[in-house]
Image (cartoon, rainbow, N blue to C red):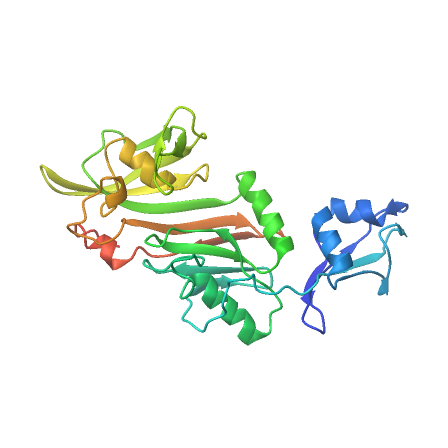
Length: 310
């Protein structure tokens, strides 16, 4: 069910409003049909949110009549423990009250870790939210490895994250990457459908293995350059599943590791990181259903590997 309006309430809490279309529907069932999860309802009830019917606070036992306007005011969120808000430069590709889509440079982690507690994209987003008075923590919808550049999607509250996660699981979020590898391909377009699991003895590295999770990668050749024995190919890659290191593992498995990806056998002579960039992201808006499509140009360090042009 599509909300009739979205806005921030006077105290800056995020709110959604819906209009009942039939008599006799219970408020709890109506909210479930409107995409409000049981977990979200619990947070609204106990952590500072409100449920209003025609402007008056009601319990979920309320029976609705056609035309009733139901408003859910979501509780304010605090940054997660360990996430330090910091001021830093962000490249914003798209933003509204629900989602924030950014262009991440290579060399920057998406979220903090024990070894890198600061300077991450999430630290900077938390700093942006603090400066703007947005009562939210950082909900990462699409995450990239430190050395992978390109598009990252952030949900501005847990409800939007819930809706976007559902879209991801249903295949409703399309991510397109560009990659640079050595060698040539006989097919211009093909699929790699091989299961991926953790490599024994490593907490980081993955590999194709029969007992892994199914992983499907769609690959299309964009252009090839170079001389015999030193050819480079620029690929467009679409993920149909979201396994850790999926593109890196699949391309290495077929004998074409990403240029610069030393973890999976790539050559680092021409670039100091894996030549992988998230160039496109598309999905229908989690609230309005409107199509959202965002693009990011391939960075110069990748193009310079073999003199590719934009």
